[in-house]
Image (tube, rainbow, N blue to C red; front, side):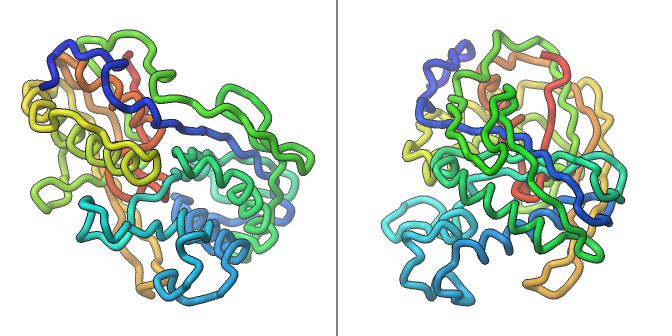
Length: 318
């Protein structure tokens, strides 16, 4: 059982590590982007990563004999082991990265102007850092957005300011362990600010409102699966006990609004609705059992579409 005062250090996530990066990009030609840029960057990045790493050029990774050793297959179509007792009904495991596009409102960048994207690599995904950086360079040469605006990768740094890529040289930084992001006890009242649309499902329905236990369910599931498939460690905890405790946390202020976002799916050749909740919500209760998961969630996001940058939040009061 998990007691109300469970300390973060007691939770079995020692192997869960992340590498949060800030990538500085410079426009080479004029770049025109949509209002929310996540789909544009995610689509272009995935295509660039495949061009850079796929040897067989097979239409599907499932048809390729190299899929067990291919960087693209691992990052974008992580195969679920046949012997796995987890996620049997899903064809792939969660992606070992989160890509956050520029969140500023501006949509046009002139040649010479710089902008930032944020990339968080998770556990084994960190081993593929050079591939991620190379793919960004190739992505810039190919171009993004309307008119295929070109850019170049200027530098990449950790969120602590350590240089990871500069002048064509890649350095191997130290990753951030799960316990490193826990900075003291939680407050009694907690405000979360969702910066990109949050898409969570509960009882097979997309939530148009957010209860605390629903958020915790989403975070526990995401962290558990990422740890299992990418960190080599299973999260062993009293999930039912966590949910029961989470149901005691109440909402005191709710300023979340539904934000609609359409993205074009090249695979389905159609525009898809990809909306979610944005804004602030304040909860009150005992957050000690959930604090490590909430803090980790700031980096790995919550809900669906995280590789598009969705589900990003900040803990405003902490």
